[in-house]
Length: 254
Image (cartoon, rainbow, N blue to C red; front, side, top):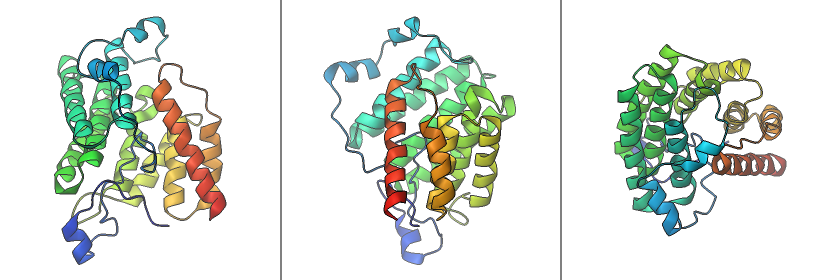
């Protein structure tokens, strides 16, 4: 099974064939498949992404560990990740990294903040592509590892499955740190610790699908599809479920 290729590839690796994952950064971390069309953001959405608070958080019961500030970051990230494209998307991701860094600096012992800094860095890497993406991917790895040091169960194990997916998506040696062995170890750990998580099941299912194990992948994807709706993250939930359905269709068509 050929792994998903993102916006760009690393030219030198493609020319030399030095890495099995040379088509870097099919980083689908908490993202939908690249086959989804990007809708142009509305003017009021753009404004909300460039400043201001997400007042919707006030009327929602947030999960443990999710502060109003983190919830606002999550909502902005979802809009950027799923509805922006091109340079506007890259610029918005850079702004999100700055905001996530501010949260981390304010509360350096907050595992959830470190995990979401890693998510912003890794998805920015996917949007940027090329050799510049490798540096961001390495920073994301450090952020996820810091989150795990503080609390490896924070936010339903987000750092565990995110780091596992990062290991799966980036090139291996000598270009980068990619390793399917490490990826599988982390993704299984995330499933064991949070068996009902839509994200843990989706990313392990995607891992299995990419490695050619469609039968087992289908089981985890169906489990992901049965996960409870996340009322506090409507955009992310919508596109995650679209990605699940897309992979299930691919499995049926194999």
